[in-house]
Image 1 (cartoon, helix red, strand yellow):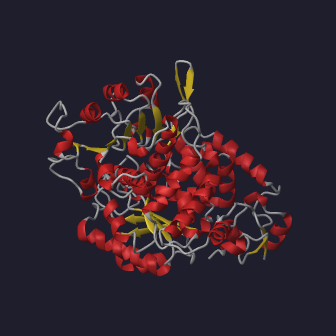
Image 2 (tube, rainbow, N blue to C red):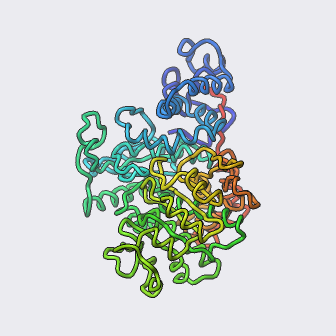
Image 3 (cartoon, one colour):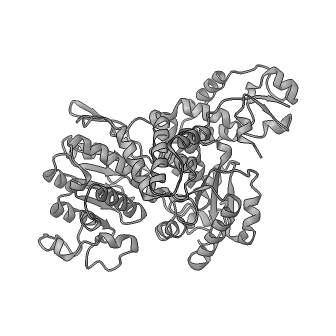
Length: 562
């Protein structure tokens, strides 16, 4: 086990020597070991003679990174550094955060997930297979760290907009936890990525002889639920105070699992709650431009799954805080699923969708073009000022839909949030051209700036990294007993406070990625205070500040001694 507190001291005593220390990524400094360290730790002859500074190592790393031709090759290069020298990895990526983020996470992480069994690299983490469920305690006990602050776990069923990627889903916890460290300051030794290998329904993976996961159709029903229960019980036993982040679970399980366990273990689902919070933050930023409140908007959401209903729930919570009743707020949201608008005669309505069923009275004067109420029908009749896409269907926001929206709204807020890029409901270029430059845009994947007429429009990415590192840090620092809806609202509003002021539609809605780390600390502090207000923590403001400072880590090389 690596003692994080001891490691943060200027001088760090190590019990291993020679090759052993070079094989531990959290201890290895590569060519940066001083001559005194080389003498004391038995490293002479095991590494090149010249002693490198951290600047030398960063320059060498960037040169090698820049020579890679494709995003996937760049991803493999970064993972190679991480698997050899984590201290260098975090110093390197923090130096070039904006450039590295699309490689570390969306969109490149999706391609890495699809090809995981071909590009596999050893990484700190756990693969918990359904086949070995009777050994759950043993598997979790095999992990060498006794103190863990954050776990990110997935079962690989719904990776981004790419669907079931089986064991390849492990790229998501690895990526998310690197961002916890990079932007939230959580020490990497206190993070744990976990893959729940319950099989896959991806036939291409099942037919691939190199596939590294359990070659079996995905487990469902009571067998799946029992496996999740075993997992949660084992985690609670070994890491009772850990923050558990559920990530990329399928539509049938994501909300259900969150609802069952959110009061049993400190946990949240980033796809449901984190996506919703960053979306709300970007919307509140957009509404500053129009000098309006959310409670005065009508919102159409294309996609009735966990992300869509999660966004809807968070928007309702904000509108209630602004003075509306919950019923009034729900009526202002038009949730459109694959079968059209969720309304009084929709055949199948899931529990999370029920609050958004539009009554017959609300639709009695609508003019409908077909057998079901399409998104175009919603836009033509409800005249929403905000349009959000989380349906993972590229091109779903057609020119006709966008132009129709712009007919009734002076500054249409259009958020095609599905990722990767190929799944975006429309491109920023299309939205800007079709609205003649009036649209306020945020996307789920990164897009380059758009030129229209004589202006350059900078496109905001609604990246969850604006929310979850700070929220997680705050929840951990204040020893929260649960993650409340109010904590997510506070995170969203704090993010919006950092947005650009004024009415310049060409400016980005949210701050740059390089500003996320200080923003995360402010989110952490405000979220911790909200936890106290919501009754799930009992810390004073001064205690919160001290605890946050104690949890934040910066990647610096310590001086080693035997």
